[in-house]
Every structure is written in C-alpha cells, then in structure tokens.
Image (cartoon, rainbow, N blue to C red):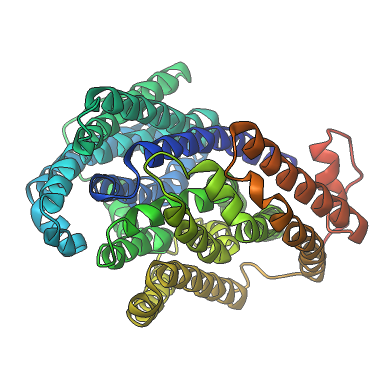
Length: 530
C-alpha cells in the first residue's frame, strides 16, 4: 500500500494545488461575469476542448497508451522498444490532432447549434459562442500532446509533472480574467472579458506543452519526429482508443448531454451548472484522478506478471482510500453547499438568487461523488487487461439512463433535476462495472473491505449530524465580510473533519497500516484478506 499512497499523495497534492487555483479562477469569473450571456458563451466554449481533453487525451488515450508503453518498457525490448513505440505514436497522433482540430473549428457553427441551439433566441449569444469556441479549441491538440508526455513519465512512476501541468492552466486563465476586466474598464461589455479569457485558454495549452516537454527531456527521454507510419502497435492503440473513449469517459460524455439540456433552460443555467461542478470536482479531481492515474500502471504490472492476488489487494486498497475520502466529502458538500456557495461565489455580478440555485445544484451533483471516484478505480481493472468492450457497454447503458431521466426531469425540476440525473447515471455505471469485475473473478468485495466501509458510514453519520446542527447557527456569517466568511467556513470544515476522523478512529474505520503510512510510522504487516 505504501507505493500506492505515495503516488496518490504526489498526484493528489499537486491536483489539490491545481483545484485551489481553479477555484480562485471560478470565484473571480463569477464576480466579473456573473451568470449571464457572455458567461454562458464562454462556458460552452471552454466545455468543448476541455471535455474532449478529458474524454480523449486524459481518458481514452491514457488508458490505452500507458499499459502498452509500460509493457514495451518492461518487456524484452526495454527502453529501445518503448522509445520506438512512443516515436511511432507521436508521428501519427500529431497529424490526427491537427486534422481533427481543423475540422472541428470549421464546423463550429454546426457544433454549437447541436449543443446550444436555444442560444439563437438571445441576440448575439450564438455568434459569441461560436467565436469563443474557435478561439479555445486549439487547446485540445496542445493538451493531448501534454497527456502523451505525461503518460511517458507516469509509466516510470514520475507523476509530479503531469499533475502540476493543470496549475499552469489556471494561473494563465486567472491572468486572462484580470486582463479582460482591465480592458473592459467602465464600458460594461462582458464580451471583452470572455474573449480575453478564451485567448488565455489556448495560451495555457502552449505553456503546459512547453513545461511537459522540458520535464520529459529532463528525465532523459528523447522523442523523434518521423513521417507518420501505421505500425501494428500504433494500429492496435487506435483500435483500443475508440472503445476506451466510452469506457473511460461516461462522466465526460454526460457533460455534453448536460450541456445540451442546460442550454435549453433560462439564461445563466449553464454557468451555474459549471460553477457548481467546480465544487464537485475538488474531491473528484484530488482523489479520483489521483487514484485512477496511480493504479493503472501498477495494476498492469501485477496482471501481466500473473499476480492476481496483488491485483485484488491493490484495487481493494484503492477502493478503501476512495470511500474514506469521498463519503465524508459528499455528505459535507451536500449539507454545507449554501455556506460554500455564498462565501466563495456570491458578490459582484453573482447574485444571492444565483447562489441559492447553485447550492441546490451542488447538493444534487455530489450525491454521485463516490460513484464518480469509484469508476476511476474500477475501469483500470478492465483497461489493464486490454478489455475495452465491457466499459463501453456499461457506459452506454448509463448514458442511456442519463438521457432518459433528463427527458423527464429537466422540464419539471430544471437545472437541479439535470444534476441529479448525472449522479444517478454515474451510480448505475459504477454498479454495472463492479458486477462485471466480480463475475469474472477480477475483483471482489471482501468481508474486511465491506466492514471498513460500513464503519466509515457510521463516522459520516456522526459528522453529518454535527454539520446539520451548525449550519443555521453560522448562517449570518457566510455572506458577511472576509473575516466572517473565513472563520465560519473554517469552523464548519474543522469541526466536521475532527468529528469524522475521531469517529472513524473510534469505530475502527481507519486501517492501521494506512494510519501508520500517513503518520510515517512503521506498521506491522496486515493479515492477508480471505
């Protein structure tokens, strides 16, 4: 468990830094743009390359590329075989990215119409969304190359550069918002801010690519540009990427579905959904991405060496860490959503009414937070075995459920119903993935793991009772001055965290080995699970 915790700690720590900067970015964005025409147009423009990034670059490409590259690296050919494979992939991947980006930018009016045809009902909104989407879309090609370079380093257990790259994105975007605010001046034209922000998205991609290229060279790796050639290995990678797109990206595919439905609702709905998802993404990014990234190369090694026992143990450890961190996070976010939204986002052009709706969206979204993270743990069980078909079918089933629920709830419950549908479909996908892993004997719940999670739920219940009691007592301070907002949220987070971990320790929800690793003490070996 030590190597898993170390890798998760590295990735999670740097991802947390990125999420903090991202949080600051969205706080600034809410105050400068609010939830209006320009904000909705930018959110759509940012959603397109960002969702494709998570879907293809960080999702499908990574889960297909990393196991193949790791197998070449640790196989008979060693470094030479791995280097040749990477060079062949780069030579083809680069041209595919350029062609795809070019086609998408040309077809952008049709793409925006498919996702947000109701923007045409507001003068100038549709045209602004098309312009901003064209400006931001080159980011996809740049960040896809970043994902490949990160994969080279991840296969060598060098996770820090890839985890740090998103920090650069958020720093550049904060600069873009600030520049747009200064250029807008007293004109009140929010389109100036949105355009400056869109330009900064592509500039951020350049900064991230330059940083990862430097990190790869510093690690002693050299990539060579060649004429594109479809070698058998590259062809195999391509065959794996397509199904992995669906299997690894149900959450991202759902983002397109949610965007389509959100743009049919009153103006500002899309912006409120995306800002609410930022709160949901904090624990999802820190825990889910960290675990998923760390577990895939480790799981691939155990599986290819025929060590099924270690593969089971690794996934069980990851599952326990995930629930230990996400169950209390989901409960705390659901109960304290009004406090967090008011303290962080309400102000400037972001009104109290906007904050009230956004808090309800947050509560609905985080109902699926444990499922979002667990999916990141279960999917590698298939990808490491190069089984891309099963996650495809489970993802399609969950997506179908998501669309069916949205057709019923969106017109009745609006944007909050849409968020709840996303949580339900993710939970459904999570259950299907576990059933398939269990039936094939690839992963199963043990009595020890189930007991540990049951104890975690007891600790979450104790924490939830305290937060439920504290919320109305501190309500007058969430929207007060800076000091009032800081100390009231600190009190909520501190008291909730203290009660959860105290209760978890008392009921035995904390694994002794895990506690020893986190406190840097040597622990006795844990007994083998039956």
